[in-house]
Image 1 (cartoon, rainbow, N blue to C red):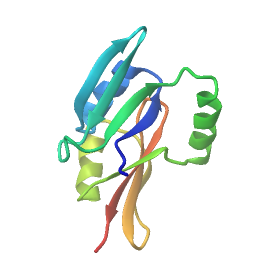
Image 2: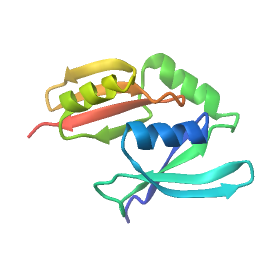
Image 3: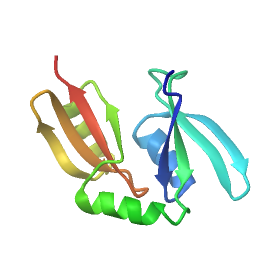
Image 4: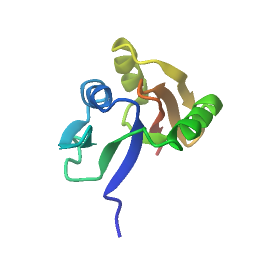
Length: 129
């Protein structure tokens, strides 16, 4: 068994696609029209055949209260690994990304939390040896 795909609810799929590709640096994999929405996935350019992130429409009624509660408590909905958190924080800040938690040393790793502009907090992590 392996992880093939994970869903991330987004407020607007086109805005999310731009953010996740042009800002975070993922690459588009699928963008298939399905009525008013799309089957829209992105992957890491480092592992293009690896797990896909599905940019899922957030129109289901259960999504808003769930994400609002996570956002209010500062809980990230997803986590992405980076090799140099300080450099990634500087790059993303330069692109206008808003961080709700700056790079923080938690002992075994460095973490930071950003707002993806699509209704989610995302944690970046650099693990230590």
